[in-house]
Length: 583
Image (cartoon, rainbow, N blue to C red; front, side, top):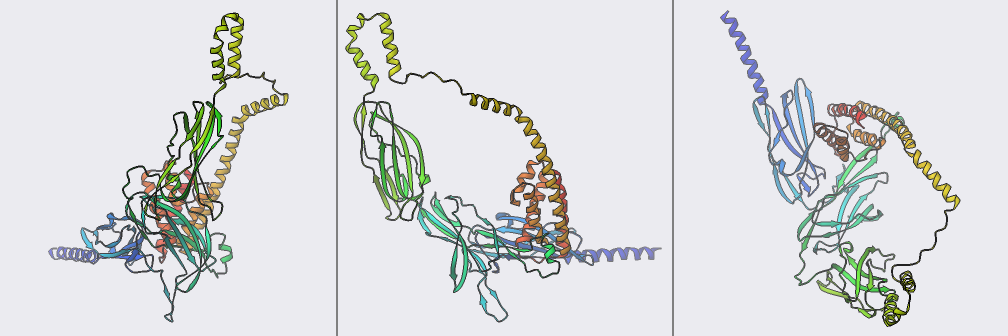
């Protein structure tokens, strides 16, 4: 009996020893996958992927803790797991972005498993301002330029506060079949950023290779001094796949069969200097050529309004120029009306900022509106300068009421000769002829056709709520049918993606689903919709992780496997079921 118990204890000891040995043999590796193809080097503001791979473990492991990762803009994009003979390999992926130049060490990653701790290696990444576009190598060792890349250009890298900087984002490409999806623009604190201009296209050479390009221009104006770095912009685009399968023509109705790609631009450093000291108010910054003033009419009666127009012509942040305070004699009053920016109609003209004022003469006589002054910092000459208008002369004539009152004083001695009725008639006549009082004509009766039109509008207004209610019921039924059909098609596409083990299709499936339900087209903004529909914060976070995972699968260059694609497709079906109930 003792011998038998000893054998049992021995087996338990051996099993425990083997189990802990397997646990201690867990291997954890951390590596960086830059999307620009350059090892351990990224452009500032350009995201990259950190993978933490845990091998030789039984079952699942908890998410690792990565030292120093929380100091950057980072979030987890997915978790992938595969198992062979009971041993599993788990990979956690993180989307990281660093917004300052330098060399950074991230890690190690620590995993706690079966009361044991495994520690990975550290990784080092160098963040630079720019990287030459990635080149690919053929078998004969001949190099050629990348078929698509993105460049960010500015016309000045050293400016003063308020100076105009013209930015150009140019997308170079060679494949005419690609289509652009959207532009990713970073936040630029410390700058007044104007909207992008219209799309321009053309042909240009880069390193001796001819490319077609699409470009956008816009302006930014620094608002504070300092050294700033404009991070990398990005563009998402699609290239149609060459599908030679027999059923390819049939499956094109299920999926667009396109490769989703993303390219990043370089970063740009801008040095902004403060303006030189100036004792007084500075009205603008830039290069201004002319300031004019004009008033119409030049002659008016007391209290009548005249329109004074002041225009400033030149290059600068015209939207930021405030309404000038005018120098005006005491006999004249003025009020701000409105202001507008007038863009040039031809290449030989400059933009203008127009200010309009209402001017009233309070006393009769000849009055001079003095010259107005506009003080600005000339960025070309690097000094302060002034623009001045010409003086304007206006003639203010006495109002009729003053003449009447003067005549009344001259004839005051004769007032006793008039009866009470004559005095009343004089006063009434005086009121009806001058000032704000005037004779009102007798109203004409309403035309019969206008009466019947108003009656018809009243009837329509009474029946409007009933009509709206009926139309609303019809629209709800149509919307429910549209949602049901969109979810049905989405499930078909998810099943097809699962059969093909291709998770890159899922992102376009959910974009199409939301657009079919008359929702937003960008999945990054759908969390607000789901929050308004009453989804819990836990499910909102789960939705964000799911969107990041399918976006990563669609745009990042990864090798899909059956397990990861199946897991994403399973989650996609669950989310379609949830969305069908709340959209």
